[in-house]
Amino acid sequence: MSTSLMVSDEGPVRILTLNRPRQLNALSGEMRHSIVSVLNQAKDDDTVRAVMITGAGDRGFCSGQDLNESAELDAGEGHEWQGAWKDYLLGFLQFPKPLVAAVNGVAAGGGFVTALLCDIRLAVPGARLIMLEINIGLPCMLGSFLLAQELFWSRAKEMVLSGRDIEAREAKHMGIVHDIVEPDKLAARGLALARELAAKPPHAMRLNIQRFRHMRRQAMEYNNVFEALETYQGEAIASGEPQRVMAEFLAKRAARKN
Image 1 (spheres, helix red, strand yellow):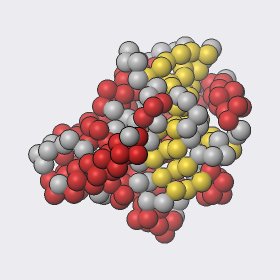
Image 2 (image 1 turned 180 degrees about the vertical axis):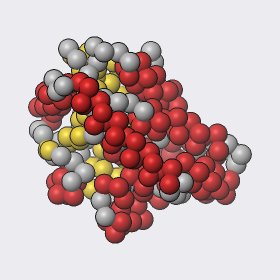
Image 3 (image 1 turned 180 degrees about the horizontal axis):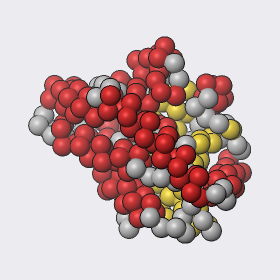
């Protein structure tokens, strides 16, 4: 297993810790592949009854796609790149057990999507949730759909088009975050919640989860979300705009460190 993902078990709960704290746990291709592999393995493991996902460190749950990777995409790689993201999405949609997100800091872009793919979300008071694709020159296909499912269209459009920070208190008011927990209690609270779900009758729990996942996937297929991921993201990457915007961001960040 990759060092970018730590995996441990606490009784019936499998804990996945995104482990790139210096990069605010940005999702590299390797990390996404590791997460899907762990979920696929846990799917048929009867000793695993629930999964909790959190981030290493105290600053970030997950800052989204690793820009060092996506900034280097050439014009013809958009479809392949989005195919890998589709595999990541399906790893969650095909997982038939409860998923708890313990959001210990910023959750941006793909990190926000990862939290939305979980069933219950806890967050620290300082957490910020950002659907930031617009700020790096990308259309927000998956995030916009998930937000529209969780919220009203009006709120989803405002968040996607502005790319603004949503603080934990506002996110709880919206219903995106189910509870706010102090940082020193987040891991314990997330684990306790996951244990509580794991203790429910497993067959009924599986059927409930499978139904929720099925309804979400049906809606995604009806709205051609998978096709939109490849078409719109591919067109954006072919334009060169995201690569230019991301390169400028990385250059500014490097200058601040010097």
